Length: 101
Image 1 (cartoon, rainbow, N blue to C red):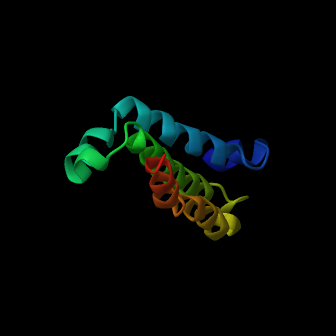
Image 2: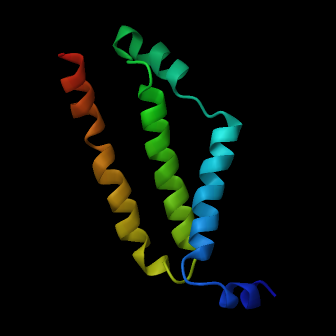
């Protein structure tokens, strides 16, 4: 039955459902990193850094889960994950540059 429903939907629909569903669920569950980061990093934790990191990680997880569940996008899962991870590597450099202001 699920196969029949998936066959009727345009390619990428299942990906979009899982991708946004995971992000929305994470937001409602209140997965907060700000407090944890402030505790670990101390005075160096800029307000909002937890939201930036949490958003980046949440996006990576939801994109990968979406790609794994959608047969139309499954072959691209490696590129999708890499595309999410590469910009995350810039966060420490951006934070350093912003703290020098």
